[in-house]
Structure formats: structure tokens, C-alpha cells
Image (cartoon, rainbow, N blue to C red; front, side, top):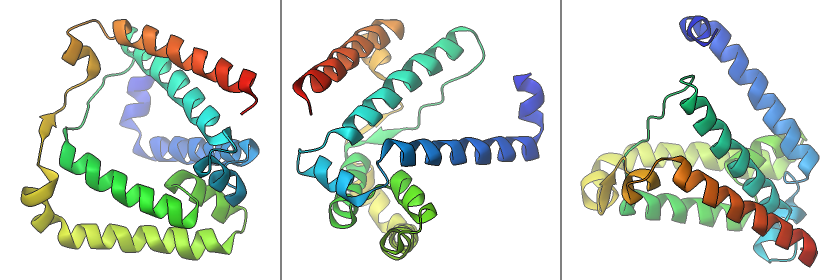
Length: 185
């Protein structure tokens, strides 16, 4: 089934569109496309975003490694560096702090009709992408490749089977989610 889907590019695009719409609906239903929820997270008064993100990490981590174990998926980690993580984190954090949306929630907020998300978020994303594209050649050698760690993953770093990382991390996430709920955060 997956090999047949892999050969059909139009079907892949349609499936991606449907999954994207479902993702946006779930973000909206979870409440994270609302500015007040995002700002509440930044002020540590509303942990809705953390709960949704941790749940997504948990489901995605287990799902990807289960599919990989069954031979239905392959992992192709992209190379990284301290420089790319620092620059990306800084850009993301500044935009998130100023506007109150991340790239996923800004798309959901635009779909809800929030003009601040459209003009601040989408326009900001396009301007930021254009600036990065223009500055990339200069940034690549000077900043982005600093602290290059390649396509290293935690299982390779610790020299263990992937499940040796997935299971303890999953248990920690579950414990943290229970603690957040019990604390009423």
C-alpha cells in the first residue's frame, strides 16, 4: 500500500493536504490558535500548549519508531549544528514572543480569520524566509555550520537500540503530563 502511494505524487499531495487540515482542526479544537492561550503559556499560567506538544511528541515518537520497526518507514535525520539550532531558536522565539503564534498555530489562526495572524504571521514568515534565503550564503560558513554534529540521533549518541531511548522518554513524558494535570496547570 505504501509503495503504491509513494509512486503517486498527486495522491501524496492530497493526503498531505487532508492531514494538514486535520492537524489545523485539532490545533483549533485544542485552543492553541488563540492568542491568549499562547501568551498564557509564555507567562506560565496556561499549560495547554505544553500538554498538546508533549502529547504530539509522545504519539509521533512511538508511531514513527513502530512504523520503522515494522519496515513501513525509514528515518532520514537531517544534519544539524549548534549554529543552526541557535539561529532557528532565536528567530522562532522572537517571532513567537512578539506575535504569540508559532508557524503551526499561525496557520490555524489565519483559518479562523485572525488578521494579526495573517499580516503579522504569514507575512512575517514570508519575509523571514526571503531574508534567510538572501543571507544564507553568508550565514552558512560563518554561523550555521558552527558546532556541526551531523545527523546524530540520541540512540546513536548513546549507542543503544532506538527503543532504549523511546521507552524512557515516553515514560517521562507521561509522568510529566500526569504531574501537570495533577498540579492543575
